[in-house]
Image 1 (cartoon, rainbow, N blue to C red):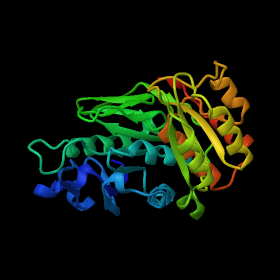
Image 2: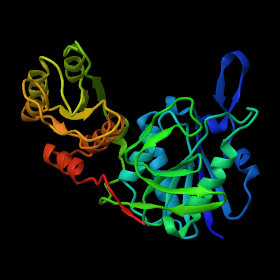
Image 3: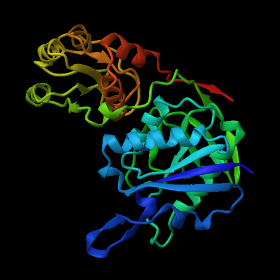
Image 4: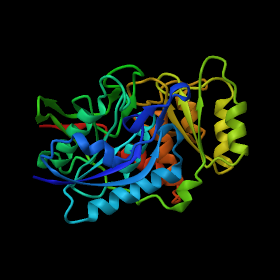
Length: 328
Protein backbone atom coordinates (compact mmCIF):
# COMPACT_ATOMS: atom_id res chain seq x y z
CA UNK A 1 0.00 0.00 0.00
CA UNK A 2 1.36 3.40 -1.04
CA UNK A 3 0.56 6.88 0.25
CA UNK A 4 -0.67 9.21 -2.51
CA UNK A 5 -1.35 12.94 -2.30
CA UNK A 6 -4.18 14.10 -4.57
CA UNK A 7 -4.22 17.76 -5.55
CA UNK A 8 -7.46 19.08 -7.03
CA UNK A 9 -7.69 21.94 -9.51
CA UNK A 10 -11.15 21.42 -11.03
CA UNK A 11 -11.89 20.60 -14.65
CA UNK A 12 -14.60 18.41 -16.16
CA UNK A 13 -13.87 15.73 -13.57
CA UNK A 14 -15.15 18.18 -10.94
CA UNK A 15 -17.99 19.63 -13.04
CA UNK A 16 -21.75 19.37 -13.01
CA UNK A 17 -24.39 20.77 -15.34
CA UNK A 18 -26.03 24.06 -14.43
CA UNK A 19 -28.68 23.71 -17.11
CA UNK A 20 -28.65 26.67 -19.45
CA UNK A 21 -25.39 27.88 -17.93
CA UNK A 22 -23.46 24.83 -19.15
CA UNK A 23 -20.97 22.75 -17.19
CA UNK A 24 -19.22 24.42 -14.25
CA UNK A 25 -16.39 23.05 -12.11
CA UNK A 26 -17.86 23.02 -8.60
CA UNK A 27 -16.90 19.85 -6.72
CA UNK A 28 -14.04 19.68 -4.26
CA UNK A 29 -11.58 16.81 -4.28
CA UNK A 30 -13.13 15.15 -1.20
CA UNK A 31 -16.22 14.47 -3.30
CA UNK A 32 -14.19 12.89 -6.10
CA UNK A 33 -12.39 10.32 -3.95
CA UNK A 34 -15.55 8.71 -2.59
CA UNK A 35 -15.44 5.95 -5.22
CA UNK A 36 -11.76 5.02 -4.82
CA UNK A 37 -11.08 1.39 -3.95
CA UNK A 38 -8.73 2.38 -1.13
CA UNK A 39 -6.02 0.03 -2.30
CA UNK A 40 -3.76 2.89 -1.32
CA UNK A 41 -3.84 5.58 1.34
CA UNK A 42 -4.78 8.99 -0.06
CA UNK A 43 -4.60 12.49 1.35
CA UNK A 44 -6.19 15.37 -0.51
CA UNK A 45 -5.88 19.10 -0.99
CA UNK A 46 -7.84 21.48 -3.17
CA UNK A 47 -5.66 24.08 -4.87
CA UNK A 48 -8.52 25.61 -6.88
CA UNK A 49 -11.80 24.56 -8.46
CA UNK A 50 -11.79 25.91 -11.99
CA UNK A 51 -12.17 24.98 -15.60
CA UNK A 52 -8.65 24.68 -16.99
CA UNK A 53 -9.48 27.14 -19.78
CA UNK A 54 -9.63 29.82 -17.05
CA UNK A 55 -6.19 29.15 -15.57
CA UNK A 56 -3.47 31.81 -15.56
CA UNK A 57 0.30 31.36 -15.38
CA UNK A 58 0.08 32.29 -11.70
CA UNK A 59 -2.20 29.28 -11.15
CA UNK A 60 0.31 27.01 -12.84
CA UNK A 61 2.98 28.30 -10.48
CA UNK A 62 0.75 27.48 -7.49
CA UNK A 63 0.24 23.94 -8.82
CA UNK A 64 3.97 23.47 -9.42
CA UNK A 65 4.87 24.64 -5.91
CA UNK A 66 2.18 22.47 -4.30
CA UNK A 67 3.41 19.42 -6.19
CA UNK A 68 7.00 20.13 -5.13
CA UNK A 69 5.93 20.47 -1.50
CA UNK A 70 4.03 17.19 -1.65
CA UNK A 71 7.00 15.40 -3.21
CA UNK A 72 9.25 16.67 -0.42
CA UNK A 73 6.97 15.04 2.17
CA UNK A 74 8.70 11.81 3.19
CA UNK A 75 5.33 10.16 3.86
CA UNK A 76 4.16 10.68 0.26
CA UNK A 77 5.03 8.09 -2.41
CA UNK A 78 3.47 9.83 -5.39
CA UNK A 79 1.21 12.71 -6.42
CA UNK A 80 -1.99 12.80 -8.50
CA UNK A 81 -3.33 16.06 -9.90
CA UNK A 82 -6.90 16.33 -11.19
CA UNK A 83 -7.12 18.90 -13.98
CA UNK A 84 -9.24 19.96 -16.92
CA UNK A 85 -8.22 18.51 -20.26
CA UNK A 86 -8.26 21.82 -22.17
CA UNK A 87 -4.84 22.91 -20.92
CA UNK A 88 -3.56 19.78 -19.20
CA UNK A 89 -0.75 19.48 -21.75
CA UNK A 90 0.60 22.87 -20.64
CA UNK A 91 0.40 22.46 -16.86
CA UNK A 92 1.75 18.91 -16.95
CA UNK A 93 4.65 20.00 -19.15
CA UNK A 94 5.57 22.87 -16.83
CA UNK A 95 5.68 20.47 -13.89
CA UNK A 96 7.75 18.02 -15.92
CA UNK A 97 10.28 20.74 -16.73
CA UNK A 98 10.88 21.40 -13.02
CA UNK A 99 10.40 17.84 -11.72
CA UNK A 100 13.31 16.96 -9.47
CA UNK A 101 12.07 13.89 -7.61
CA UNK A 102 12.07 10.16 -8.39
CA UNK A 103 8.44 10.06 -7.23
CA UNK A 104 5.87 10.17 -10.04
CA UNK A 105 3.39 12.97 -10.57
CA UNK A 106 0.34 11.80 -12.51
CA UNK A 107 -2.29 14.09 -14.05
CA UNK A 108 -5.78 12.90 -14.82
CA UNK A 109 -9.23 14.24 -15.59
CA UNK A 110 -12.35 13.26 -17.49
CA UNK A 111 -14.17 13.76 -20.75
CA UNK A 112 -17.60 13.53 -19.10
CA UNK A 113 -18.87 15.42 -16.03
CA UNK A 114 -19.76 13.93 -12.66
CA UNK A 115 -23.50 14.02 -13.31
CA UNK A 116 -23.37 12.38 -16.73
CA UNK A 117 -24.99 8.96 -17.23
CA UNK A 118 -21.55 7.32 -17.31
CA UNK A 119 -18.85 9.57 -15.84
CA UNK A 120 -15.30 8.48 -16.67
CA UNK A 121 -13.66 10.53 -13.94
CA UNK A 122 -13.88 7.93 -11.14
CA UNK A 123 -12.20 5.23 -13.22
CA UNK A 124 -9.52 7.62 -14.49
CA UNK A 125 -8.80 8.75 -10.94
CA UNK A 126 -8.51 5.15 -9.73
CA UNK A 127 -6.00 4.37 -12.47
CA UNK A 128 -4.03 7.55 -11.83
CA UNK A 129 -3.67 6.67 -8.14
CA UNK A 130 -2.48 3.18 -9.07
CA UNK A 131 0.02 4.65 -11.53
CA UNK A 132 1.36 7.12 -8.96
CA UNK A 133 1.69 4.25 -6.49
CA UNK A 134 3.63 1.99 -8.86
CA UNK A 135 7.33 1.58 -8.04
CA UNK A 136 7.85 0.80 -11.74
CA UNK A 137 7.03 4.42 -12.60
CA UNK A 138 9.62 6.02 -10.36
CA UNK A 139 12.06 8.25 -12.24
CA UNK A 140 9.66 8.71 -15.17
CA UNK A 141 8.81 12.34 -14.43
CA UNK A 142 5.36 13.82 -14.88
CA UNK A 143 2.77 11.63 -16.56
CA UNK A 144 -0.83 11.82 -17.75
CA UNK A 145 -3.12 8.84 -17.11
CA UNK A 146 -6.35 8.85 -19.10
CA UNK A 147 -8.58 6.11 -20.49
CA UNK A 148 -6.23 3.30 -19.54
CA UNK A 149 -3.12 4.85 -21.13
CA UNK A 150 -0.26 6.57 -19.29
CA UNK A 151 1.74 9.08 -21.38
CA UNK A 152 4.67 11.37 -20.77
CA UNK A 153 3.83 15.03 -20.27
CA UNK A 154 6.38 16.14 -22.85
CA UNK A 155 4.88 15.96 -26.33
CA UNK A 156 1.34 15.41 -25.06
CA UNK A 157 -1.43 17.17 -26.96
CA UNK A 158 -5.20 17.39 -26.78
CA UNK A 159 -5.99 15.69 -30.07
CA UNK A 160 -9.73 14.94 -30.16
CA UNK A 161 -12.54 16.88 -28.50
CA UNK A 162 -14.99 13.95 -28.44
CA UNK A 163 -12.81 10.88 -27.92
CA UNK A 164 -12.97 8.87 -24.69
CA UNK A 165 -9.21 9.34 -24.49
CA UNK A 166 -8.63 12.79 -26.00
CA UNK A 167 -4.82 12.75 -25.85
CA UNK A 168 -2.13 11.80 -28.32
CA UNK A 169 1.58 12.43 -28.57
CA UNK A 170 4.21 12.03 -25.94
CA UNK A 171 5.62 8.64 -25.06
CA UNK A 172 3.24 5.87 -24.06
CA UNK A 173 4.85 4.88 -20.79
CA UNK A 174 2.32 2.30 -19.63
CA UNK A 175 -1.20 1.03 -20.07
CA UNK A 176 -3.74 -0.79 -17.96
CA UNK A 177 -5.06 -4.25 -18.73
CA UNK A 178 -7.86 -4.65 -16.25
CA UNK A 179 -6.40 -3.51 -12.95
CA UNK A 180 -2.83 -4.38 -13.94
CA UNK A 181 -0.38 -1.71 -15.01
CA UNK A 182 2.04 -2.71 -17.78
CA UNK A 183 5.04 -0.44 -18.27
CA UNK A 184 6.25 -0.26 -21.87
CA UNK A 185 8.78 2.61 -21.96
CA UNK A 186 10.68 5.01 -19.73
CA UNK A 187 11.05 8.61 -20.97
CA UNK A 188 14.55 10.03 -21.10
CA UNK A 189 14.78 12.72 -18.43
CA UNK A 190 16.54 16.09 -18.79
CA UNK A 191 18.01 17.98 -15.85
CA UNK A 192 15.24 19.82 -13.99
CA UNK A 193 14.83 23.56 -14.36
CA UNK A 194 14.21 25.90 -11.40
CA UNK A 195 10.64 26.30 -10.16
CA UNK A 196 8.78 29.25 -11.68
CA UNK A 197 9.14 32.45 -9.67
CA UNK A 198 6.73 35.38 -9.33
CA UNK A 199 7.99 36.88 -12.59
CA UNK A 200 6.53 33.84 -14.36
CA UNK A 201 3.03 35.06 -13.48
CA UNK A 202 3.46 38.10 -15.73
CA UNK A 203 5.44 36.47 -18.53
CA UNK A 204 4.08 37.49 -21.93
CA UNK A 205 4.54 34.88 -24.62
CA UNK A 206 2.26 34.94 -27.66
CA UNK A 207 1.64 32.29 -30.31
CA UNK A 208 1.36 33.50 -33.90
CA UNK A 209 -0.05 31.06 -36.43
CA UNK A 210 1.50 30.95 -39.89
CA UNK A 211 -1.07 30.14 -42.56
CA UNK A 212 -1.57 31.00 -46.20
CA UNK A 213 -1.53 34.77 -46.55
CA UNK A 214 -0.75 35.49 -42.87
CA UNK A 215 0.94 38.85 -42.55
CA UNK A 216 3.36 40.07 -39.92
CA UNK A 217 1.07 42.67 -38.31
CA UNK A 218 0.01 40.56 -35.32
CA UNK A 219 3.56 39.32 -34.81
CA UNK A 220 4.94 42.87 -34.81
CA UNK A 221 2.12 44.08 -32.56
CA UNK A 222 2.99 41.42 -29.98
CA UNK A 223 6.62 42.52 -30.03
CA UNK A 224 5.80 46.22 -29.74
CA UNK A 225 3.27 45.50 -26.96
CA UNK A 226 6.06 44.09 -24.82
CA UNK A 227 6.02 40.34 -25.40
CA UNK A 228 8.93 38.55 -23.75
CA UNK A 229 8.82 35.95 -26.51
CA UNK A 230 6.76 34.96 -29.52
CA UNK A 231 6.22 31.40 -30.67
CA UNK A 232 5.76 31.05 -34.41
CA UNK A 233 3.47 28.14 -35.23
CA UNK A 234 5.16 27.62 -38.57
CA UNK A 235 4.03 25.54 -41.50
CA UNK A 236 5.64 22.20 -42.27
CA UNK A 237 9.19 21.76 -41.00
CA UNK A 238 9.10 25.32 -39.61
CA UNK A 239 8.39 27.96 -42.24
CA UNK A 240 6.60 31.30 -42.52
CA UNK A 241 5.44 33.57 -45.30
CA UNK A 242 6.82 36.78 -46.82
CA UNK A 243 8.02 39.41 -44.38
CA UNK A 244 8.58 37.12 -41.39
CA UNK A 245 12.35 36.88 -41.78
CA UNK A 246 12.65 40.66 -41.43
CA UNK A 247 10.05 40.73 -38.62
CA UNK A 248 11.95 38.07 -36.68
CA UNK A 249 15.19 39.97 -37.10
CA UNK A 250 13.56 43.16 -35.82
CA UNK A 251 12.04 41.32 -32.84
CA UNK A 252 15.34 39.77 -31.80
CA UNK A 253 17.10 43.12 -32.07
CA UNK A 254 14.40 44.57 -29.79
CA UNK A 255 15.11 41.90 -27.17
CA UNK A 256 12.12 39.66 -27.87
CA UNK A 257 12.87 35.95 -28.17
CA UNK A 258 11.34 34.13 -31.13
CA UNK A 259 10.78 30.38 -30.93
CA UNK A 260 10.05 28.54 -34.17
CA UNK A 261 7.64 25.63 -33.75
CA UNK A 262 5.35 23.86 -36.23
CA UNK A 263 1.60 23.61 -36.50
CA UNK A 264 2.00 20.02 -37.77
CA UNK A 265 0.78 17.57 -35.07
CA UNK A 266 3.75 15.19 -35.33
CA UNK A 267 7.46 15.63 -35.96
CA UNK A 268 10.18 18.14 -35.09
CA UNK A 269 11.15 21.48 -36.57
CA UNK A 270 13.99 20.96 -39.05
CA UNK A 271 14.97 24.19 -40.79
CA UNK A 272 15.27 23.14 -44.43
CA UNK A 273 13.84 25.76 -46.78
CA UNK A 274 15.24 29.12 -47.82
CA UNK A 275 13.36 32.01 -49.44
CA UNK A 276 11.83 32.99 -46.10
CA UNK A 277 11.58 29.42 -44.82
CA UNK A 278 13.11 27.87 -41.72
CA UNK A 279 16.72 28.39 -42.77
CA UNK A 280 16.20 32.14 -43.11
CA UNK A 281 14.09 32.40 -39.94
CA UNK A 282 16.83 30.76 -37.87
CA UNK A 283 19.48 32.97 -39.45
CA UNK A 284 17.33 35.94 -38.44
CA UNK A 285 17.45 34.76 -34.82
CA UNK A 286 14.51 32.38 -34.35
CA UNK A 287 15.22 29.44 -32.03
CA UNK A 288 14.01 26.05 -33.37
CA UNK A 289 11.66 24.34 -30.90
CA UNK A 290 12.69 20.79 -31.77
CA UNK A 291 9.75 18.50 -31.16
CA UNK A 292 7.77 20.92 -28.98
CA UNK A 293 4.44 22.04 -30.37
CA UNK A 294 3.35 25.67 -29.87
CA UNK A 295 1.47 25.36 -26.52
CA UNK A 296 4.34 23.56 -24.79
CA UNK A 297 6.96 25.73 -26.50
CA UNK A 298 5.12 28.73 -25.07
CA UNK A 299 5.28 27.32 -21.53
CA UNK A 300 9.01 26.67 -21.85
CA UNK A 301 9.60 30.18 -23.20
CA UNK A 302 7.57 31.71 -20.36
CA UNK A 303 9.54 29.77 -17.76
CA UNK A 304 12.94 30.62 -19.20
CA UNK A 305 12.36 34.28 -20.04
CA UNK A 306 11.02 34.91 -16.54
CA UNK A 307 14.17 33.60 -14.85
CA UNK A 308 15.69 35.17 -17.11
CA UNK A 309 17.71 33.29 -19.72
CA UNK A 310 19.95 34.12 -22.66
CA UNK A 311 19.20 32.97 -26.23
CA UNK A 312 22.01 30.44 -25.87
CA UNK A 313 20.47 29.01 -22.70
CA UNK A 314 17.03 28.76 -24.28
CA UNK A 315 18.44 27.04 -27.36
CA UNK A 316 20.36 24.63 -25.11
CA UNK A 317 17.18 23.62 -23.30
CA UNK A 318 15.28 23.26 -26.56
CA UNK A 319 17.94 21.02 -28.09
CA UNK A 320 18.93 19.15 -24.91
CA UNK A 321 15.38 18.16 -23.96
CA UNK A 322 14.96 14.53 -24.98
CA UNK A 323 12.34 13.32 -27.41
CA UNK A 324 12.93 9.62 -27.13
CA UNK A 325 12.48 6.87 -24.56
CA UNK A 326 14.03 3.71 -23.28
CA UNK A 327 11.92 0.66 -23.97
CA UNK A 328 11.14 -1.56 -21.06
